[in-house]
Length: 114
Image (cartoon, rainbow, N blue to C red):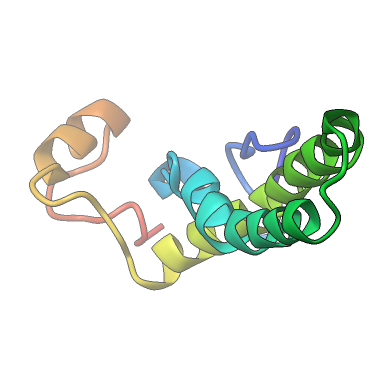
C-alpha cells in the first residue's frame, strides 16, 4: 500500500485497486497527536513533578519519547484512514464533476466503482 514512509502507491499490486480516491491529508497526524501524545505528555509531567529532574533529562528522555511516539503510529493510522475512505465510499461533498474532469471518468460514476 505504501511506496515510502507515508506515500501511497498509485495502484495495489495484488488487486489492482486504484488509490486515487485516497486523501487522508492531515488525518494521521491529527489522530497521532490526539491519541498518543496526551498520555505521553501526562507521563512526562508526572516525571517532572515526581522527580524534578534537570533539563537535560527531558532532552534525553522526553524529546525522543514524544517524537517516536507521535511518528510511529502515522503509517498504521494512514492505512486505517485509507481503508475507511474506501469502505465508506468517502468523497468530498460537491466535487463529483471536478473529480470526473480531473481523472477522465464519466460523471455519475464513482472511483469506487472500478
